[in-house]
Amino acid sequence: MSEISFPTPSHMPFIASGAPPDFLPQPFCCVRVNDTWKIAAERNGVWQRLNTGLPEDATECAPTAEWADNGWIVSFIAGGSESNRAFYLYRLYGLDSGEAIRLCGADVGFTWKQTIVHGGRRGTMNIQSPSRIRTAKFVSLEYLYRASYHPRRPRELLISGKLRNTGEVATFLYHPGKSIHILTADDGQAAYKAAFGRGDELFYARQTGESFEDRQIVQAGSYRTVELNLKEEVREGFVAPEFAPGDDPAFE
Amino acid sequence: MTVDGKKVWLQGTTVMMRNGKIVFTKRCPCDCEPRVLHSTTVDGSSDDRDERCWDLKPYQGSDEGTPFARWRLMEVGEDRDCSGTHYGSGEIDECGKLVGLDDEFCSGYDYKGYMEIQQGCYRPDLGKWEWPCPEDSGERYT
Image (cartoon, rainbow over all chains, first blue to last red):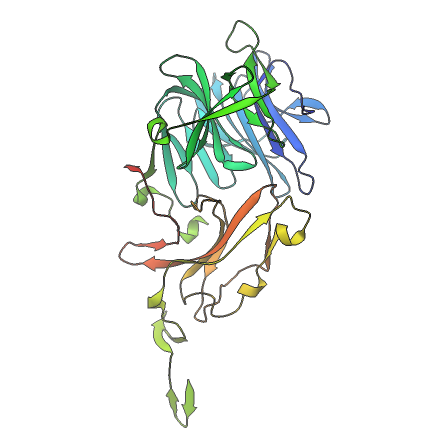
C-alpha cells in the first residue's frame, strides 16, 4: 500500500511527481475549510491549504500539478464566491504565490505543459494544444464533474461525471482519438474523481456518509478497466482550422 | 560554383532574391516538404544521462533542412498525434542550417517522451505553415 494518506474529509486527489531525479510523489486534494472546499498540498507530512489569493468564500477544486522550471505549476477550478458566482480554470505558479491566474471560464479542466483542457458542466470539452484544438462530447454523461489526467501517461484523461441513464457517477479513462475505458474500484464501484500514484496505485473519493459530498479519499485495493466503444461513447472532432492556434511562430 | 575571370559559373545551385538580396542555395526552397528531420525517445527517470538527454549538436550544421523552411522541436506522443509540447523553433537559413537549435534537450519528466525535430513548409495557397503531423480525423465542429 502507498504511504500517502489524505485528510478527512477530502476529495479530488492528484499525485504529481516532484523534482528530478527522485520524482518524489507530491499529493494534492481539496479539503474543507469553514464549509468551503479549498485546494491543499501535503508538505512535510502536514496538509496545508494553498495560497491562491481568491476570496475566502470561493470554492476551489480539481487540482493538478506539475514540476517545471524549478517550481510547481498548479491548475484548479474555482468560483462561486459572492463577488463572482462563475467558475473558471486557474493557474498558480508556486504553492504560496497568492496570485492565481484566471485562464478561461470552465467547470472542469486542467493545464499540463502547453495544453489546456476545459469544459462546462454540460456539453463539449476542449483539449487545446499548441497545434490543434480537439473537442470531445461524452454521450453517456449528463454532467461533467472533473477532468484530470494520469501523471505518467498525460495523454490519458480521467473524466468523472454523472451518467445520463442511471444518474450514478462514473469515471472514464479517455485517450483522445484512441480509446475509452470505464474505471471501477474495489467491489465494482465507480472510481469517482480518481488519481493514479507513481506506482500506478489508484486513489478515489469514496462516499462515507449520507450526503453526496461526504467523501474520503481512499486507496483502492484493486481496480478494473473495461474498454468501451470510442465512437459510441465520445463524439470527437477538431475546431475548424481557421480557428485553431495553428503553427504560427508567434504562438511559440 | 566556379569563378573564371570575371564570370561566375553556377552548377547545382539555386539563385534567388530574398528580402532584396541575392542568395544562393544548394537546394531549392520550392522543394520543401514537411518532414521529420530527426527523432528519439527520452526518459527523465533514467539513471543513464544518454537516455535522459538528446544530443542535438550533430544537427547544428548545414544541409539539415530545406532553405527558408522552419524547424521545431516537440514531443509528439507515442502515437505521433502531435498534440504535445513545443520546446523550440526557428528558421532554416539558406545553407539549410537549423538556426537557434540548442546543444541538447534533457527531459525533466518521469515518463518517456517521444521527440522529433520537424521541418515545416509555408503553403501560400493555404496561408499557413504545414508540418508532418497526422491528418485530422473525425467529425469536424465549427
